[in-house]
Image 1 (cartoon, rainbow, N blue to C red):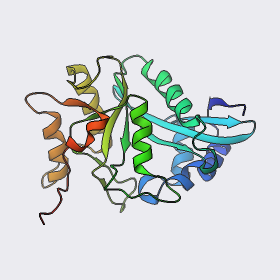
Image 2 (tube, rainbow, N blue to C red):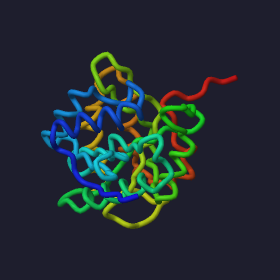
Image 3 (cartoon, one colour):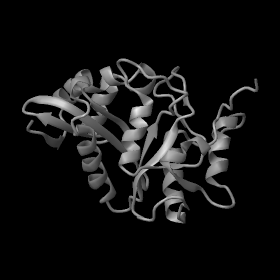
Length: 236
């Protein structure tokens, strides 16, 4: 297989990528509309890197900068191409591109928790996805988290993990984030979920963890079960 990874900024390419890779790989609650995706790719709001084999798309990683942090919005490989190294190549390309930009402190991603999110024949297996990121050395922030609604009327996707794929500071977990890293996470949260409004206890919990007096801890991804839930299990 001859694989190349290049940016996608033209509307036709972004539309085709959405149809072939993004839409089949994520449920409606975890993706924007086709028109929004194409417009964001063309404007640079989304930075889209696609893996190709000739004229065919193998997969894509899509990131967006929010202050001093990049968030991987989507990473997907076409169903028939999984397990061939394309996902790893896309993550490597994205991290190298984004972490090298001036002022960027970390590249983060949202990951479903195994056990809370079931495997799906089309959208994949959260346990395998977590193992993929674990092999790549990702760490997890010790704070409850939700994916903000992707569109008006759409629900929040609660109890995701917010993982750090790479950081400018190479110190491994477990450790406390540096002040610069904490500021980067804050810039990401403010840009995506906004400040905690009155009556929004979930968002208040996220910021309370960010502002913990002892600092926000970065844990090995293997210890993700220690990360608190927004919706604790009901007592039996």
